[in-house]
Image (cartoon, rainbow, N blue to C red):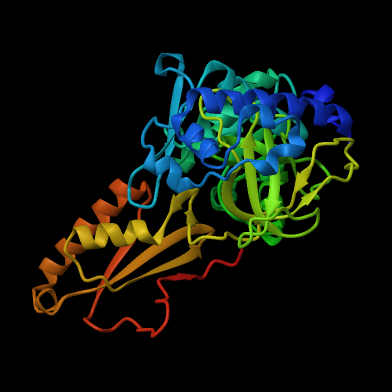
Length: 434
């Protein structure tokens, strides 16, 4: 297969060149953090670290870690390193108590995010003139706009379809002649099934590739998608705090995802000791934003469990690869691309005066994630009419949708009917086969 590169100077760069580039950018970033972000100045001062102590990328282990709670504690703009008038975009994702994790971008930050997404599309065989069908959601969620800007940066044509309205999706795939589709893997499966149900032969469509991310998916699911849509399916990775989709991406070899390490420097650490781990060992993925201006996070703990490989890929790229994340070091769930924490659910339940006994059950039905929240009723609610119970279920459902940004089925159950545990309560049952 002919290789497509968006920026071969970087994607095929020598390790020596990358080391020098990363070192220069880290030094500049640390100065920016120290001078412009009071949070980081305080953290650096506490450990006696001065910007002059960072002389190369090899000194990165001298720097402190950043965690998601730090973004919450400094909500909304406390970690920004530039004046607000320099921001041209704000994105946000859900946090554990309903408070959003806010990310700001300068024009430069948007450009490097778009570059990462453009590299991903090129690695999937995309080229100038292709029609890129973007079925990720648009809005505060980073998925849709990330691939949209990446397509335009590549010189391709972005079709901002957004998510939902599957009949319209199918019509556009046929009428516009989309070449590459971008969406969650579960939605790709749903589109494939809908095409089949409508009697549309996917092999007759121009569609040749798909770029799928924002939720975990298995190799079996990849094969199913490829068969259903008659395409080659590629994985893409991103997280709103670092950048949306395009932080890393698969090439045609599909032996891991190449990280845009000229902008997002990766480490893998032991989640308990926080000591760096060598290539091939699984641990927690950590990113330092050496290319960003507005939100230059230092050693940000993603909680994703993966391993790195610096071996040169058969595709020719020298950029380090991360393996598909195989879990998380915290309790976050990803439901249809949205981050959901059990503590968020608990916060909503308690704020509505419900009993604190609940259980979250996640299933994958017809290749779409379905979250059911079972909540024990109080004795008084249990004795109420069916109508009153249904009204309460609807009230909770609306609150979940408003806070989480994702719908959930609410099932009020009898008092004392959920299992009890002497140890840590089993709050989450994830039945998805990833």
